[in-house]
Structures are given as structure tokens and as C-alpha cells.
Picture (cartoon, rainbow, N blue to C red):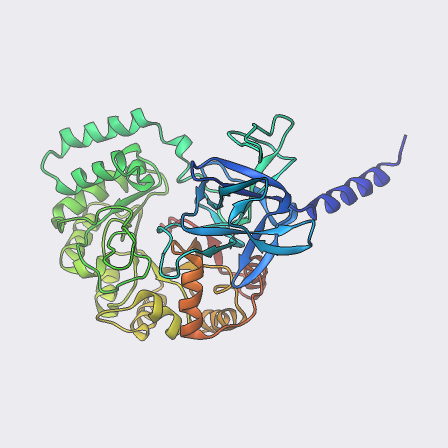
Length: 463
């Protein structure tokens, strides 16, 4: 019998070798059929730099993730025969068949290590408002479904799976759709209709849960985790990637923005149905179906006082661009426990180029964060990530300086929902270009330099 140490060394060597195995490229035809190109490697992008994807740089595509065909673009692949990166416009095995890149929209809790490698066919065309993670196909994996090879035949019967170039930063199943039974959601909706027939905010959340499939709204009606409290019809920023209002280019918003400002009592009723009844509960202002909640300060402040008169349990949070420091300070005094500040960059020029503030400036955001820290509130940064920008040398240096000055509690690593190449150009124009360090590297270095800083995806309970 072989020595156990020898067996372990052999297994480690095999595992290490396997981690360097390249993935096959996956593309789609006009019908949306996804297939692998066996003689071509899958490619990811970090800024302008293409990277050949391997097993070690990727993970089995997380459950709940979705594959997407990128319209009006061409895929970049790595030709094993030629030993170089190439941009394809046709299927090399079916001349004349147009092909398109395939990206992965990763489940919550996963941050993109690389984005999908592609080129635009039209210079002014913008991809729809999703994040576009790099993906590939591995011949050895846990799952293989609905896949076709280059000849249109089903593959994967002997094993294989889609892979995602992503890093897991949060394992909490808060938005795992498998744990959100439709019957339970409907039952929750019906119960709230009976109990609060005149609450307009409840009716809005019904639409979010049943029509738009919003996980936060579903969780409210299921009585779990975090409840959403949208309040604002307007915003004091004009973000490039706003998912509730788009009036430029070819983009469309992902959902309708709330059309009314709820009454303070309606807000309090939603929060009080959730906070005292749910373990480790959170209720959050600032959702994808609204503008910035600080613009609804006049109804939120009295709502907070109504809530805290009834209960001192649960965390009341606000997701905001934090452009109104004085109003945010008053909300802390009224009972707000935590704040999550959305930032794509901690550099003024890059922040301004993306958020395009209307009635505030970047320094107002910093003032809000400073006030929150001084008042000992829990502060998270909603850090909108794009490989090649977020992990650039210039941004990372600025981030370390920012964290040294503002001792925030947490970074929530969120993928930027915007055309990556267009975003990259905008950021280079605003802040210059510098080499990429790698997403995993900057996260690991932050863990060492700022050991008290939390890394994750979801708003945590702090009460």
C-alpha cells in the first residue's frame, strides 16, 4: 500500500495541474442556442487585457445564475491552433452562421473576476443593463444541461459544466430563489391585503414580488431576512446604469419606478410587520424601483419615529447615494441604524462621471460617510465592481487611502450593471488608465491591511 503522504502529494499535484486546464469558449447563434467551440479557449477581460480562462480562475456556474447572449457584439476567443486571441464573426465550423458572445449573470454573492470578452459591432450601441461575467465550458464538472456542441448535438452526457469567472464573497441564501415558494408569497400577499387594504406601499410591493420577481419583496411576504421600503419618485443623480429610469441611448430601465410617495404611516406599517417578527430582520429604504430615498426625507423621518416608538428590534437601513449629509444625519437621530453608500469609485472624477450628480458633489458623499462614522452607525460601501477599473492600481491606491481616512464597516462587492467596454472607456476618460491588479488580489490585500473590514454582498443586521 502506498504511503498516505505520497497519495496526498499525488492528489495535490493532479489538482494543481487541473487548475491550469483552459476552458472551451461558449458562444450562441441567432436562435439563442449555446454551444462550445472545442478548438478555442474561453476568454475573460480585465480592462483592455484578455485572459485565457482556466479551471483555477473559475467556479462551477452558481445556482440561479443565467447565461446571456450579447446582441450586436462579436466574441473574443483564444485559438489553440494559432496560439493567439481572435475575434470571430462566424462559426468556424459552420461558415456563414453568425455567432455571439455568451456571458454569465451571476447569482447574488458572487463578484466578477473578469468580464465577458467581446467587441461592439456598432460603436454607439450599449448592452442592456446587466453585469456580464466571463464564462466558459469545462469537460469535467458537476452539471451539464441544455448544451449543444458545434454540430448542434447535445453534449455533457459524460460530465461537464458551465464555468463562471467569479469570486464568492457571501454565502448567505437571502436571495436563493429555491427558498422562496410561490405559494408562500401569494399567501403573504393575501394576508397583507386583508390586514392593510388601504396601504398603497403594500400594493406596490405586491407588484414587485409577483410581477417583477423582486427577491426583496418576496422575502417581505415570506417573513424572512430583509424587507424593502421604496419611497422616492425622484433622484438627485443621473447614473449611467440607473435601472429605474433611462432616457438616453438605446437603454431601457429594468422596472418601473414607484409613482407615488408613501405616507409615513404606510411606511411604518410595512416595517412593523417585518422587524419585530423576523429573526435578524432588516428593513431598507433605497430600492431598485425608486430614486434616492433622501429626497423623501419628509415622510421617512416621521416614519422612523413611529417605528421606534413601537419597537427597538431589527435593523433599519438606508441604501443611498448619500448626497444630502444634513438630512442623513437627522435620520440617524430619528432611528436609522445603518447606511449603505453606493459608489463606483472613491476617486472624485470617476464617481462624478458615472453618478452624474444633479444637486450635490462628491464631497457631500464623503461628509455623509464621516457623519455616519462619528455617530457610530454601521456604514457599508456599495462598491460597484468592474474588473480593470475597480482593481486598477490607481483605484486601489485611492481605496486604501479612503479606508484609512473613513473607517467604514463593510464593503459590499456588487457587479456593475452596465456595458463593460463603454464603462471602461468612460472611466479611462475620467480617471486615466493603469494596470489591473486582479479582483481577488485586492480583496485579499484589504483583508490583511484592514482586518476589521467586512466583505460581503447583503445588508447585515446590526441590532
